[in-house]
Amino acid sequence: MKRFGRKKMGKKLMLAPSMGCCDLYEFEKQVRFIDAHADFLHIDIKDGNYVKTFGVGPDFMKTLKKTVKTPMDAHLMVRRPQDFIEACAQAGAAYITPHTDCIESDAFVTINKILSLGCKAGVAMNPAAPLEGIRYYLPLLSKVTVMIVDAGYAGQKVITQMYDKIRTLVQWRREMGLDFLIEADGSMDAGVYGPLAQAGADVVVLGPPALWNKDADISKAWAVMESEVEKELGGLNQQA
Image (cartoon, rainbow, N blue to C red; front, side):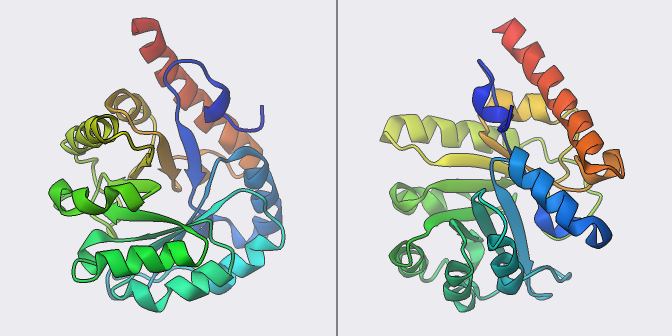
């Protein structure tokens, strides 16, 4: 089964590994394996300003694009996303996802620029970001990423109030007749997949705790992660 989430019956989750977490010493092997199994490739681009760490950049995506076929999502954890949009599009991003608090003054300009470059537009929302702020441009979006922890700080507990935010997005999507994806990002691991799927999330972003820390061998790590997801979704489907 190439795409885990797409072929499951009932509740399902699509999987988006964060590619900046790949082991540099095993990089080619891990990239090829993940490309064959994931639904999206999540690319965290950080500027050391919006979040106090640095990530990969458009050049990283350009290199990946030579090998991968899975859609790449550029998650712009940067203070000025407008400075990165064209480079990400040229590097092969399928989705470009800035944070809502960084485009408050020019959201429509930013989103329409992403679309004009042939990419799908997403937005990412920190836990304290209000949903009402995106309601007017939701029809332009293909994805909304709900951060279930504050961006940029490792080791946080999941903020469970974000499940309500996801439920509200599901309701709005239905009421407005839209089809954007709802993605959850942050502190992903066993025990979180079930509540997220139950709330209505479509995609989960996988970091080291969810995937790479499971085993040094990426295929074994993926099998462990997949079994954890399947177990939680199977429990939900039995209840349904």
